[in-house]
Image (cartoon, rainbow, N blue to C red; front, side, top):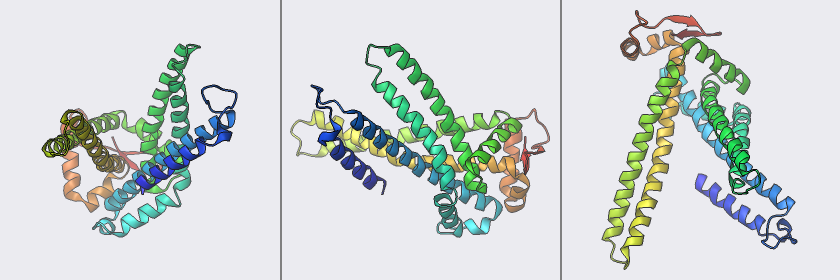
Length: 300
């Protein structure tokens, strides 16, 4: 479905941009007219927005499934359980407005940053554009990081985007920065695994290309084969690692919000997680401490 959307978007974009009304007749280099520039920006914004919405729908769905497993394990006992269907339905309908709103913020920032980056080659105020693009890149990364935690709350509890954002800030305030350290370590590990899979896939494609006798000049085809295999491996592994990252973030939030429920539904895993917590932060002593996070219990 995603490949079909990308191909459809590419065909529509190329067809629209080749229309005469999109070009500036007075320009010698066939530059875009003001209408053409507006349409091109609209196409790019729609593409970025759709990409963010689809990714965040998946993230909210994974969070919902983890929430079912955390609170009601019987509803998430199999691959085709009711938890998967109900979480996907809620993320695609009831919570779609919240997901679309947060995704639009990221898409607009990404479009502005891309526009400034493409215009940075111009000597007129080129340095200022580069500085602005760099600042926007940091803002975009910060918003994406904030959004991914907000969508965990959207998937778990069905909060709207603003309420989910408040819960995120409250969680960070109560837990400190330990949650960020855990997230960084997890994402680094998943990133290394994804890179390793991409390299191995590229080497397999390189070996297959080397064995094929149809290519007379193998030097160019060997590099192309490795690149194609590497990209395919990175894309496919990135999808699976993204699911794992969403699940880990959801577990962290649930462990902060509802530790008592976890002790009741999964006592063995709860004991293991509490032991790991004490080993990681021995200065706390006595294991996890229950605090109020504003509407629920939490661990610090």
